Length: 160
Image (cartoon, rainbow, N blue to C red; front, side):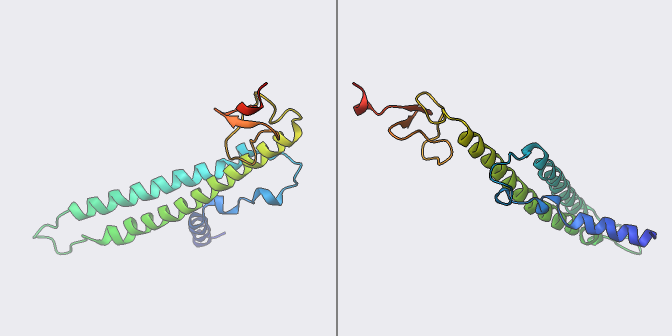
C-alpha cells in the first residue's frame, strides 16, 4: 500500500465513528443474553474522539482569532489554521458526537434486552418485595400487586 493509499484509508476511518455499526438488540435471538460491556467500547472511543475534535477545533479557532500579523510580514496566515484545522476538527467532532449518541442508545437497548431476559427467567420476578420501576414494562409487579417506593407490595385496600 502506498503512502497515499494509507493516508486515504486513515482519513476514511476517521470520518465514520465505529458506534454507527452496532447492531440493534432486536436482531439478536430473544433468548440470548448479549455482551453489553463489549458494546460500550465503541461509544467510549467515539466520545473521546468527539471531545478531542470539538476541543481541539475550538482551541485552534480561538488561537487563530487572537493571533496578530506583523506589519512587516510579507504574508499573513491569519485565518488559514481555522480553515485547514479548526473547522474540519469541529466537523469531525460533531460526526463523532452523533456516532457516540447512537452507540450509547444501542448500549442502553442492550441492557434493557438483558434485563427483560433476566426478568423472564426469574420465577419470582415481580413478587412481593421485588424491585420494581413504576410504569415500566420490564421491571413491573405481578398481577394484583402495585409498585410503591421501588418495591412490589399489595395495594392498601387488599390488606386484611
